[in-house]
Image 1 (cartoon, helix red, strand yellow):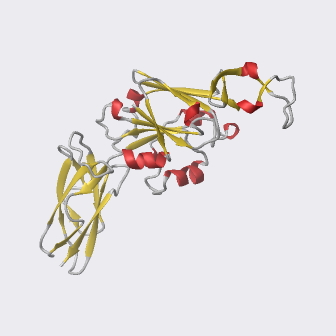
Image 2 (image 1 turned 90 degrees about the horizontal axis):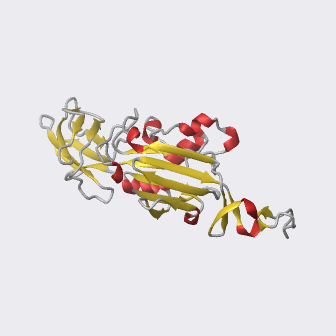
Image 3 (image 1 turned 90 degrees about the vertical axis):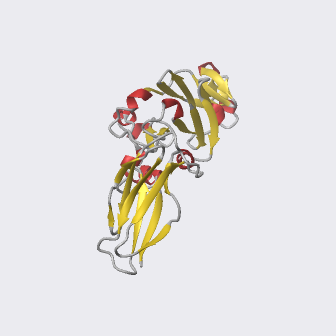
Length: 285
């Protein structure tokens, strides 16, 4: 499994392990090397040195404390029974560290694992705006599920940390840097795209074959996974609005019912909780 690290949050140490399908992450306090020493002596900047006997290990220039301030284990397999489990899903992980104030948030908050796209579906907010304005708290990480039928090894992890040197991961987790976790979501999760031109014409009595396929964000067709695709139109009539792909592709028919010459309809395709990954404009002649 791949773990992306975004450089965000004040410093804390992070341990991430994956045993079977059980993911465990633990957060521990740290102290910068320059402040660690003989606690009986004065530091040049004022106050006493931090007691070096409290340091469990060093990670770069940071001394890591022994006991976790927060630890959580999640059976990834159990997420498949989550009521918000879906194609193109991002399950949020929270911890009382960094941008999450420990003293102001109930402990029960940290045991939830919501799907970001369910939470933001109605408002269409991005993750940053949603956490800043609605929750007023920010996640420490996420679990990305590309498809409901994807094996767990195809899922992706992401954590916000101060520096990669503060992170330890088990050998079965491949660590990679990331600019932001939002970018990881954009570059990792699949999309639905229409096949052919994004603009077509039709007569008032004709119809349009609407073809689409699953793709990676880079535009590579996905043929070994299938998903339930949701379509909507601003006008006219779609014969089917929910279609399960076969070998990554699907189709439906659009009819310009009720439309007049010179009008246009925009058809959107996406997933249940992440709509509008592509648009198709149909103009009536």
